[in-house]
Figure 1: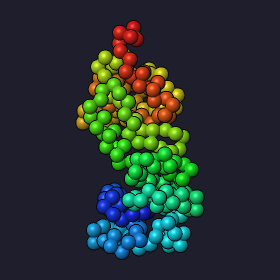
Figure 2 (figure 1 turned 120 degrees about the vertical axis):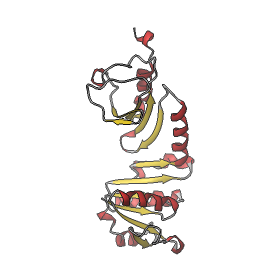
Figure 3 (figure 1 turned 60 degrees about the vertical axis):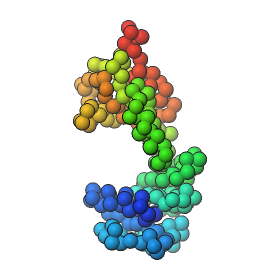
Length: 224
């Protein structure tokens, strides 16, 4: 997979390193000469250019990329890069970094963003996830389809504890994608039983989140 990253700062370089370790082809783009540190990520391609300029993106051959990541420290730049990547080059997957939480509402399909990553939101979600049992925690927002990646730890008193996955009537526009049980990561099968303490990860439409939380948190005595 070919990935272009706009922004070769600490965040961009870190992402590049992870992707390279996983066998992907990475191009780092930055207009600041001081940011071009080839020795820090020698396996990557580097381009000294303004990622907001069409000529620069032509030089980067953005049409050949499977994914573009707008990872600069400037939200305006990240939005412009996302829009150009999607509308001018038809990049299938555009991921954008949100630096200021107040701007998060802008990072949507209209600006070409498929996935918006807000560091403050992720940090707060991780704090909530660590202390909350029975409460739905939103981890990541997907612009297409108004869906979110959400997590809920199944409480011991839930009526669904001991129930097989295939026997649960999940809300519409909701998909259980992973069960984390202790140190194990399970791909859900119809015959798998849900256990108290399971961390359940869903991709769910935002309108279904409340319904999903109620379903998983209902107490056994309330369901009987």
